[in-house]
Length: 323
Ligand code: SD4
Image (cartoon, rainbow, N blue to C red; front, side):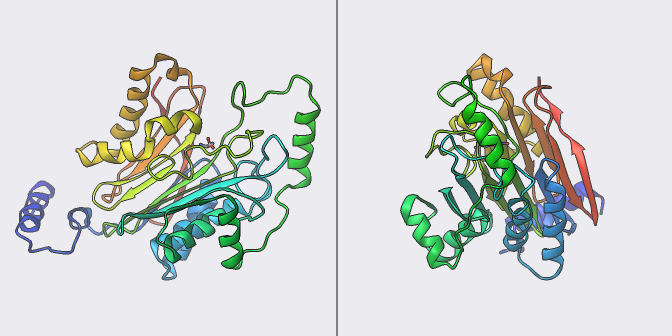
């Protein structure tokens, strides 16, 4: 049976219920192995850990969580977790979220202080509560109850950078415009039709305390749905939140777009609504259960590298820019 006929055949028996309980995309995937797709260079070790966890029998969510932990725990990465640059008061505030595309459920944490691994706290919001997103004092108490240790997240390097920023009389603030980026976003498929996604960030350096952007918001920084695929976003989250970036990409895929088409369409739509978005620092990645990958940045000023783990190979690739 050639590929097209095989797909039609699978669709037709799926429609009759003969494959009840098996996602149509799983049937179509041809049983390829797991795939891990992450943002930026640090996505490579994250994917490698995720693949290792999965190969040892961990779930897809375990893989995404533990993969993202690698980046969160690395003090040399100044945009995620421990060592992330702080807010304007010199306090590190972390955002993270994780979503299970099978249960269609997420867990997320906003502005978490003193815990190195916010994605793991988000995972427990998903697994241990009927809530989706926690923030404020209640989040701190939840993390404590779950056994997380509070520790100083500033490293000598991030403290030095904050003090330099603070001492500069002309320093940039978020009452004006943005600075750094490099969030970790990860999307995974098990090759059998299941999708999971996660995202973790320290947000924009020197942000106004309490600022929450796209990364911990379901449908903005991350989204996963077994029936269509998953997506994640990196860059100017204050802007992208207004476009519900990740869910918009997944909905485009649900209507038939490939992950690459969906990523590019989303970025083009942002420019259709507001021409100056062409200059913005926005980038997205997407994956469907057939193992097709998409990655794009808005313009050549934002050069997105993304990491792909597939068939035992761990690659770092350059995303296309739309403008
Ligand atoms: C934020 N979107 O807090 C995040 C930052 C980011 O790559 O993704 N940087 O706005």
